[in-house]
Image (cartoon, rainbow, N blue to C red; front, side, top):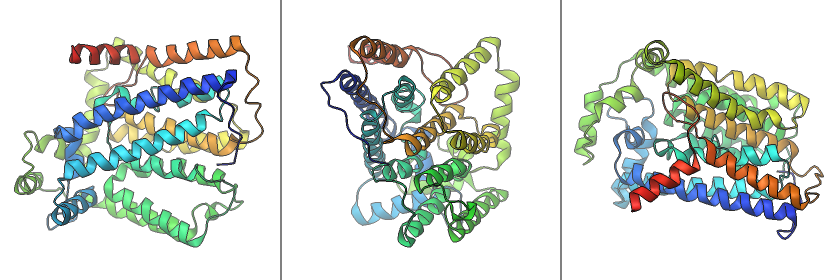
Length: 391
């Protein structure tokens, strides 16, 4: 990240940044609460995807479960606890990155995207979205933003990045659809190299494509879901509804595509259609209002279009919009942060109005992670639900 000057907190702009920081910390706390309920509560759907492991055969998404199982054998720490710690640390780091950006951003659209229910507050509002594997993908550009940009990568850095991207495909092959957006980020972060082959390096791109091909071709061979459930039972994780989430996670495309088409064909009522369109518009609003560089906007739009097949083969549309919005935020940050913005020229009236708009923005809607998306009461509904639970 290009170095920018942090504004003093006592200025009007600093007070707005302080409010954004508090909102981001609130989002982190709510996310960790959801994560605790999902992972440590042994929720079937949230936990099973992490526990898929190799049982004498190569199974997609099996690398994470195999590594977790081997770590449990050595350390004695239960796999769900390890998953919780990994996810919690990742969310803390993502929040620190967002806070750093909050003290450099000054435009309303930038702050709206930073605390949007489609970015920071997505996992805070949606319990089932906390702790999913895409957070590891988002962590890669977030950590790069901690360092000054514009320098070409070294060979060691490039090799480590290649290994990370390849392993991510063995954790969740669907993350491959977001690699074009990740490539745009590094294209900007490393100073826009003139040749596309210089984006990640020819060996890195070839290895990543090879891992994607191997992972996707493996779906031609139907896995033995019952054998995987039996394996979890042997390892003392006998989940009540093991087969259903595993079938969705490791089966061939016909299962996930059928879910999408059943939604479009039988359950897409007028009210739900309005909800979908509203959710799309609210998600896209802050992104569209940003002062994008023209060259960055064109390539970012093309990379976003590369994710469209994922919406056909998988039903978790809200999750995909969350990843897209967050990656677009990081791309914008890599392109603009530290370029001499007048951060402190915000008067008292503007600061009060900005704070009011931000609170209303977070409180008025939320993005649903699975099946449908739409406008729901965001922070208001979340606070009311927690109050009801505690009281």
